[in-house]
Image (cartoon, rainbow, N blue to C red; front, top):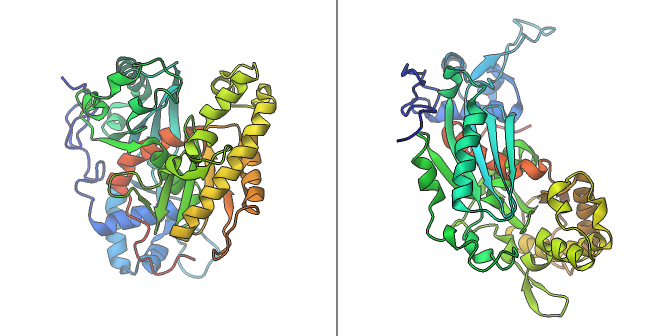
Length: 409
């Protein structure tokens, strides 16, 4: 039987129907999502500005805002005074208007996150492990979600809009690269994590590749506020990526768009190899181990990695050149606004890596390509769990940013 965390149909735990905005079943009207998306993008806006940017009439905007305020999705701020005429009342997203849960399934750890409508992380739970198993993950989800929602009151629990899962595709195929014993990950081959979690909870359950989810987090809560399109590299145990086009996460026909781990580069031996072989943290882990160091520091200490020693310097130089090469290849196809690089790495390491990629780009033949910036991501280790938690928000409350607002200035 599914756990009674939140009843279907937008009802609270007591069965009292919530207002129509809670799951957007009634508030999926285009204009309502448009207003919510615009306010999310701008932070706060008065109704007059909403009308100007959307091209909707002042009367239409007033009706929409009144309903969204009644639904608990928007709340008014203090009036802005000092201008001619009536003071303007700005509105912002009500952080208690909706909640979502994100699950990140990593090769070395799992994370659960509770996210609110305004993008605030309410709580996270981290679970390290040697290798993930379906049974261990299901136990973590069951106990972890109970802990996440324990501080929400019944009305807030009824406002949980769904759960998102961020996990690698075909986890079992990467056992050798992850250093797992033979057969250790084969239990995942016939295990449908999304379906099994859906047996426990009554919310909609969404699934996304872990790197694509991280890209979604950057789109919603980071650089994506200022960029309509970018390519995204994420340094995890295995490197991954994502693509944003016209303000929307682009997944491709098979969900593999932005599968930058598979991007072909030239290995140190002059042979063709995939980016994942040199650039992932798995490669750094092996280098540290070969030097006689403790590779577990990569997962224990996200503060500095000072114990990584010379292995870190070698990895940074090699990985930066390969990412710069891949970045030029991506730009030859997409011609987007920027390359964004983030990862589950210390801030100091991320900043150094981005700078080394910028320098390595000078060594890459880019004739015929326009110049493009290499930008540092903003979210870091939480990006995959946050991206997973954002999936229900995308589905229920957010419209693609390629909607034609009248202007964006």
